Amino acid sequence: MVWLVLLLAAFGCVVNLGHAQLLWAQRANLSPADSLAMHRMLAWDIGYFVAAFVLIVLCAGCILRQGWARIPLRAACGALVLWALASAHSMMLAQWPQFEHSSADALAQFGHDALLSQAVVHARRVYRMTLVLKAAAIPVLLWLTWQLGLPVVRGQFRRRR
Image 1 (cartoon, rainbow, N blue to C red):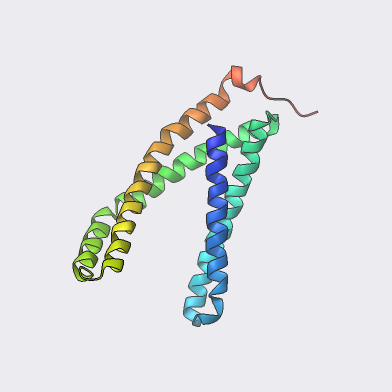
Image 2: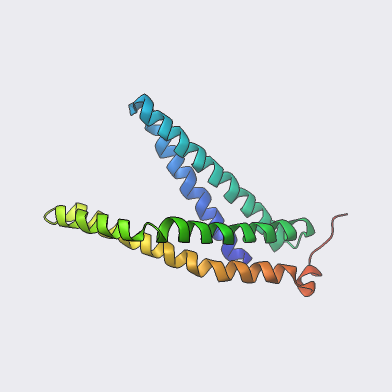
């Protein structure tokens, strides 16, 4: 499971870095108000990138059975569970009816434009997939947190010298 978390964190690094690069490339074309919004998005991208990179380091440490990485990875997995619960429930599920209504309105308006309709259908699919993946991630991360605390697993990690 640590390998899966490592791969997903690496994917997160790449996605956030790519998004930050796209934002940075567009900085000259923005008004001052849009520039402030862009800086906020850049700050989120950088924050997510740093968090994903720290997660990569912790996963690599656990894969190499380094004792310093086990407890911080348990804490990171617990934080990811809380983040998944908070973002999936409070943000995504609470906004589900509004999103469905808005996307249905957009489909009705863009009915004759195939490209825009495909974009709306794609956004709906991504929204649903994100909810499903967050729901699936919660038990996996809880299991990993539990496993990293077992005495048998604890004994497999090398202590610092």
